[in-house]
Image (cartoon, rainbow, N blue to C red; front, side, top):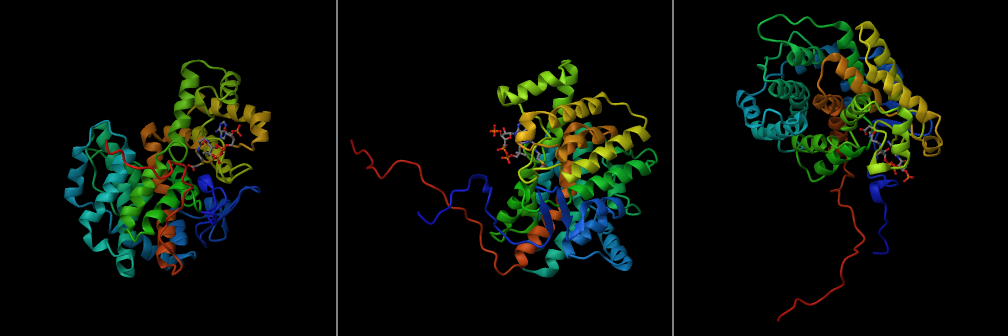
Length: 389
Ligand code: CMC
């Protein structure tokens, strides 16, 4: 096996070429299709970024309208898929509910199985983009025991999602434009991040020619882990614990630095960014602005800021180039919006969906694609004989 390179965690192995997202981790740069994340966050919309990631160019006004209209026509879930939610325990975490329901889309849309049928892939793309927010809202409603609302196609997908999460069939739900805008921007920030764990999972599963739904469902499961998307939930749990137990930030830092019980400063560190995560900068601004405008004074935000301040001045974090990542401040915002912790990673998944789809399509369309099949360095027993007596 002399020709095999040992690269645990794929620290240095490019498994693909890609024209979608550019990251310079040393400089803290992130661009989708060449556009800086800061400009997209300020001037674009989630639906426009979705189009950009998938088709490679910004849409014209007409293209955007046609795209959005088509999306709105695919929001309804098959009634039998709605029944699916009844089978899960009420307190189920919505992430496995989401991945299961997305996987189940292959059973309702059996025309989706051929990944090389371009028209079907296009249809699956719209179905997934339109239905996943509805599934996510249903997973939330299920967990709080409230009735599920049908989507209202006069609303865009972000508005619809908020209404389906927080509205009731018995009364009109008034959307708060500040919340809509903040969520839209957060979704843009999460929309793609080149070959991260969940995206690589989507590509790996897809490289066997599994369809889009199966591949994205696998990606959702990869995102669930606390070292990846699950970090946003873990950050809030960490902040709550620090508050509830009255731990001083400096004492908590000592625990982290001594690696006591494997405690980490969740929401810090990144495989690629060795500088401030450009998304975290924007998220921090949104946290300040939204909480102030909503008149919310959350001690958890203060604790987070104190932790950040301490970390950025501490040799342990400086030497290891550990900075806040996108997950550090998002939880405080989602909490202010009214989402329970369990929904935080679902929100990440909704944001990442266009990226997963764009990357899966790029992989399927690339004639150079081969089935993903890493090698190993065998460390087990040499050949031995099965005992006969
Ligand atoms: N708190 C304390 N120490 C840390 C942290 C942290 N959050 N992150 C890394 N380190 C230490 C780590 O212990 C190691 O120290 P040493 O050299 O003494 O062994 C050093 O920094 C290098 O870390 P690593 O674990 O080898 O780095 P990695 O590239 O394998 O892991 C990471 C990257 C994001 C998994 C890791 O930084 C981490 O676990 N962070 C906390 C979880 C988190 O916030 N994840 C979200 C990532 S960003 C968005 C997303 O992908 O979802």
